[in-house]
Amino acid sequence: MAVLVYMARRTSNSSLPKRIGQFIASILILNYAVYVAYRINLGYWDIRYDLPMEFCDWAIIVTCIALLTRNKMMAELSYFWVLAGSINGVVTPDLQVSFPHIYFFIFFIAHSGLVIGALYVVLGLKLYPQRWAVPRVILISQTYFLSAILIDYSFKTNYGYLMEKPNNPSLIDHLGSWPVYVVNMQIIGSALFCILYLPFYFKNKADDSN
Image (cartoon, rainbow, N blue to C red):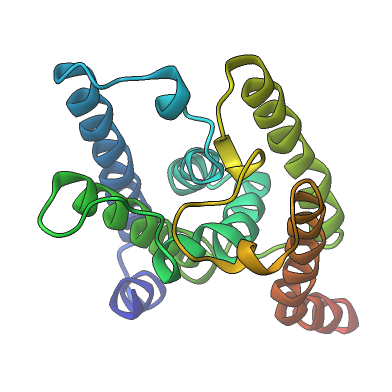
């Protein structure tokens, strides 16, 4: 990650930062395509598990858009969603398989790639969160929660862990029973957004004074 950021910020080749972003996005897209193809090919695809309705699926979408287009709104969503949410998949993975199963590789490529991608968007492409980023991201995040809840109720699924907790130990285990833990997830997520914004709050404030 540090090498990619260094290359992007120090290179005299103006197209290199864009190409690095395209490379990271390509890895994320290809990894997801492999997952879908594998599930369909073996007849495993199931609406209960395989719709792109996990929070990390949405994080992949906004991160790839940010990497490919440098869209500032997508960059903000990527930064906050990944570093406040998706990174937990690396720390406390909800996996039912182990190395060297193909799902093991797909899972960690996706979640590690998301962290690398989100950090590169900010540090490599310099798409910093702007003023009022936190309220914007909190508001847009409700689109995910409402969509996931609608799908979960309609198809008896558990996207976003909004119906029940993960099978493996995670932070959610300490947030109370359903539906209290769903509310607490939102509160903690919003608090993390504020913490993640702090460096850019001071940066934006310094920019105003110059």
